[in-house]
Image (cartoon, rainbow, N blue to C red; front, side):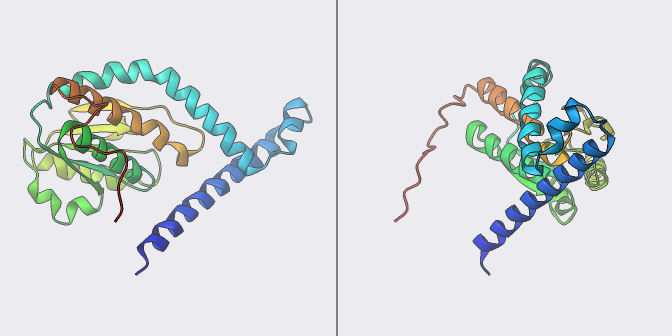
Amino acid sequence: MNIQGQFGSEEEQAARRLIEQAGTILKGLRGDMPESFAALLFAGASPEDLVRYEAREVADLAEAALPGLELATVPLALPFAYTGRMFVIGRGVEFATAREIALKLLETCRVAAEPLTATDLAHGPVAALDPLFPVWAIASDDGTLAPVQEAAARTREMGATLVASGTAAESIERAAYRVPVPTPSISLLSPLLSVIPGQLFAWSLARTRGLDADAPHGLAKVTLVR
């Protein structure tokens, strides 16, 4: 199996979905706008133009939300100061968020964090959960929400501490901690916002443990291939 080709194909499909979603939004804008300056402004816009425009909007949302997210996330380091392992779960595009958060916990905090899809959690890994094995769940307000909610319910049944983040964090019942993020106009751009609480948490947890998040022990920025 050509693994590299497979991943490339998935990335290309995600990019096409992003452009298609932008195109749908753009059509709606053109249909609703009157013959005015705004309509003329968007008249020649392509889906790619809208993606670039929405990316700037996401950057503005992130900048505005950052102080509140820091206040909500940084204090979580203390309850998890002695955590040695964690599952980070997501679904759809938020699985990429789960992978990034797990990587940051692994390399900066020495936490054995493993990313899982919400459905994969039930296929064996859930048996490892206990009150000392927390789960971080990223929830989006879209078609992937139901599987994440089901995985969160299984997590709580096992007695594990649950942290919920993402645009639909408030929809995760019985979470011990919730860190919601703003919702962008294009849902496929939500990982740019939902990754922030996890990165802030990893930074704070590293400091709590006396580690330098900017210089992880043994981490090399360049990988030598022989």
